[in-house]
Image 1 (cartoon, rainbow, N blue to C red):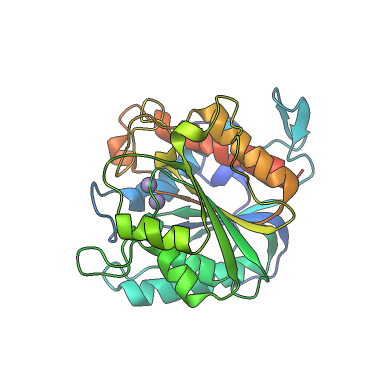
Image 2: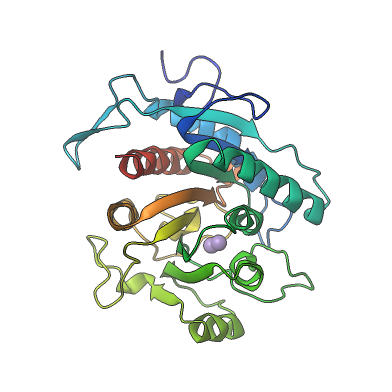
Length: 301
Ligand code: MN
Ligand code: MN
């Protein structure tokens, strides 16, 4: 079917309900929530925009042949799209409870859930759905640390999801954040993350081919991958709440994900902070949709 025709589900995966019995290799859940943003709003529209853009990368039965790996991705793999979490738009604690419950439901039905945000605050309730995973590691691709204790009087903004997660989840061992840059970092957050032993990688430390030099990605771990689309340089992804210049290329981000997937078990993926109203060319959504389909391909290889 033509990529601009028909009803949008992620990569044209069959729509599935959490009220029914099914199993899949991967399942996509949208979380259209953005009231925790600190700057430009609109990430609530991202799940729909990503479904539309992902039709360009709809997965045919024979899979998608990939130039980079010279292999066929997603051949014989089952994907489902379970729609969006039904959210109370102005009740953060209730929203968190519903997000966490939906994430647990999706997790129980597939090997790898893919969560489409939403602002980055959503990663906290999502991570809580992985509280049974021993020695859980997070790889966060982001221009920002998101480890702030309190911002503008709240503990639940998109600046704090990983701080809250480390407080609430004794099983969350380590966070590797790659792509950090800018002038607005919260010094207390940087100190707190370093004190906890987290790996903080400045965007400048990522080589052109995506390798990290002296820094290392986890190996042999259960990894939750959290992608904040502002990790990308704004020249390719401008449609995001808080863009930061001098970001990563597609090649770097894709290589970081391939490397993470090759040496760990990816147990969940989220993609946050796409803001379709700021994406006038719709390039941001296309770039991110391709990244997510490619990510599913390398994770389910
Ligand atoms: Mn960010
Ligand atoms: Mn973030």
